[in-house]
Length: 281
Image 1 (cartoon, rainbow, N blue to C red):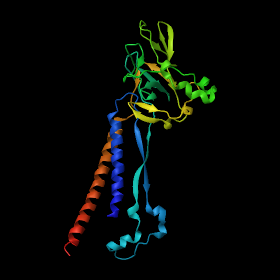
Image 2 (tube, rainbow, N blue to C red; image 1 turned 30 degrees about the vertical axis):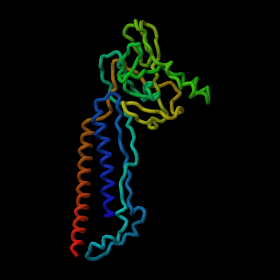
Image 3 (cartoon, rainbow, N blue to C red; image 1 turned 180 degrees about the vertical axis):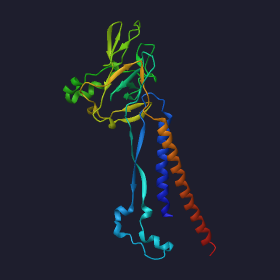
Image 4 (cartoon, rainbow, N blue to C red; image 1 turned 30 degrees about the horizontal axis):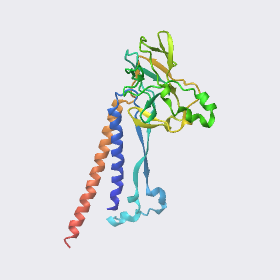
């Protein structure tokens, strides 16, 4: 049953598609979440052999005649890759002075146990040490002088290996902090720090890690020019997932998967019938 690989490859691809869409739907209400999408690749034997190699008989066909176009059983479909859609999400007011939403292509820079990560999820709070942290408790970092690092040449990466001195700490006796569009944080009329707003030359080079975090593997991918991203206090950026569209796509993908399963089941029945009938002779 070498032909079985054709529907089986489609089933594997559709299963991955269903899982991806389901994850998007599950995070429809997650602040700063960016949906994932898949790219499919189809391989057709006819494109390799050429149309002239297909010889269909002009007569009453028998089952054997269909194999005049041999090679069709080698067709397949697979996942060629996945990518994150970084489209801007809508900004929703919360009234919380520690909720920050980004409008633009920038990211917040945070420090996790696994190193520096980047996120669009600006639901922050203060821990008992007065540090500005994410909802997972990871410290938010202050602005890095990228121009000075670029001038440092080859030694630049060494200057960012210890980001702990950039953790934003608010004075314990400070009143409600405020922040302007440029990411400057003020308390009691005095500037406390600058939020690190990082933009990238190639945003699609980022790797999604989970918990709305992204990894940048190439330091040179960070833009040196001043960021154009604006910070809005008292807002959160909503997920860019359209729940209605994703649910529709999920239903469609499930139906495709079920159709392919029926084809596989039909192949299995044909195979079983052939074995049983041959065994009678």
